[in-house]
Length: 417
Ligand code: HAM
Image 1 (cartoon, rainbow, N blue to C red):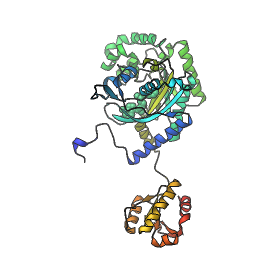
Image 2: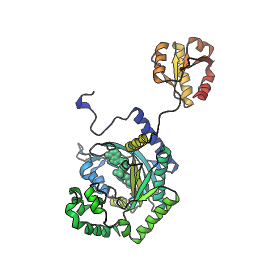
Image 3: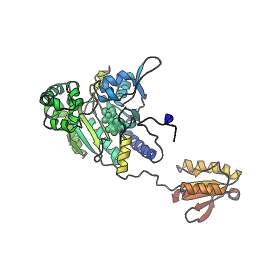
């Protein structure tokens, strides 16, 4: 056990072995689907100016008030470890004049994010997301297509997911709705939890997704935003839902879905597999580019938590272990070692990973290693074989051996595994 002083920080983890294979699989599949949907990969810094998140995610949100890792640099800048990926991408869109590209521009990203939350299952202080953002065009078709891309990513991973969707309206209908909501909540204000009492003034919509039972009882009968959308927001939302129906994407309307970030307008969604916490979420953010100093730019996007997806895959018994049989290459003597290096390259070029232990010289210790690794086949290259241009293929379980020409071995093994 590492000295307490040097242990990893609370809420972080080392990702290796089986967990690493799940991570790889999720990144691989999400990247492939993003590519098929014409998203370009973007990487933004892990730290950004604190002000970027204050302005975009919102001063009154839990993320900004309680969860951001903020520090001052030696030069006196106040930076934050990124708690989410949308604000940095919008910043990058503005800073790099992406509005000059054909619109919409579509970005895929993945990597670590940081929130100072109370660690528990599915909640870390350093966690990972992959995300998709579409900027520069306003059409319900884009919202639905985005949701479809996420849906297909999960399908490819073998997970059955459903979406919760809602619309938060825009500046022309939301303020009115907020007032009506407050009016309806006012008589019960004192019975709301402390958090919600604070939200009442500066973020009343968040009261709708409070997990406190008493708050939920109070909000059960309040007016719902979908009934208070203006004509244009209603029309957009209807189109999104119609397209989801057409694409046969499973979803349910959730009038209490409001999301924990302030930048959303119109469509919002969350992704679920079974009863666990949300695997991902997102929505439209048509005002964010302007809010950060850019020109008017409609946009939508979403992000998925990798750790939570791993948990869901494990719960659904989705296996990601390498199915291919393992091959070990053993060598004996100097000339064989040289040949083995060449042969290793031949296998590599064919995309076949071969285990070896070039640092070991005795055949016995190499065979022991092959056994330990669970190799199905061991290729044995000794001095005799080298001279004759041959190699032995040993089937580890049965101990059966055959000698084959060196230049045929890659082909032979390819067939066997
Ligand atoms: P979010 O809902 O805050 O949205 O996070 C998206 C997902 O990240 C969550 O559903 C969850 O799976 C994962 N996640 C968040 N916090 C943690 C945590 N502490 N530990 C483990 N997983 C976590 C956003 O971040 C938005 N930027 C999504 C978006 C993109 N909206 C538009 N574009």
